[in-house]
Image 1 (tube, rainbow, N blue to C red):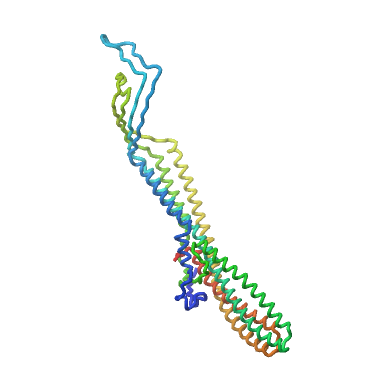
Image 2: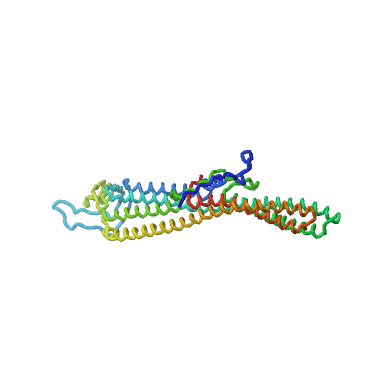
Length: 425
């Protein structure tokens, strides 16, 4: 893919007075409003807060776990001691029992489970942010279509206005000639009918422009009811050799990283969990079963837990994650091929439009000469107004084609940048 550079030397919809204009709206401004103000962007902050909360929860797994319990019970019978030492009474046990205890457990070794959970949460956060980027990418493409769709409609409207002026001027001349008997009334009627047809097209175009502004304003969150001048100030450069910056790649990479972190989590299932514990209680009975009074006691120790079912299944779970990673790699390759085909198509469209513009200029130049010649013949009464209208419409169509192709060329460059995921700036 070769490097293509296009510098917009003639911005048709950016007039020399653009610097003095205050009622204007640039494409870059639209991009920035989407990037910062579109409701979907709020999901990024929400996801970050969720991730922070979850990270705090996982981190607490490294801290001591303290629990407190209390109980009171009464039982129907107790153990009786049938004998006693000479001169002593056999011990008796109360049927009502009481217990207030505090248990403390401090993890010593978890095999890296907490760190794995935190890594999964972080990659999940990145995946959600990338997913927002994918959604914004679609919105940006929609803005491109609206932005340049309005421009094309306004070009058509301007061309129709010029056509209207030409017809009205010629209608004045024809009216006077009909009144003098130099031309038949049919010439005047033909011009009036054509003028109504053009005004009908103007009405439809105006409504479409207003509708486009309303939709664009709704998406960007900006009041565009004044129908500001839409401008592209930037120099457009398309580099066909650089890496794509599409958000889909970030999404796929973060999902793949999340699977990698899940593998680390499953590997921790092969290792035992070690912890230290301590317990203190005030209860009846206590550790001394023959003391029927309330007692204060404590216990400390170490514990180990090893789940053999998790140990046995962890290998299978890791293999499943490997297969899911292979799926993501295949999905990434498929997306790259599709994207490259779209970029090649966009490059070809750019080249075709550049060639069409060169031809459009030649056609328009020839049509202008023909109309000028036909107008002289009409003024001399050699041809009818219908014949002149035919040539005038051809000139109008040639000028409109040129202006449309010029706008479409800029649109093609912008859409190329959008497809490639190039900078929002």
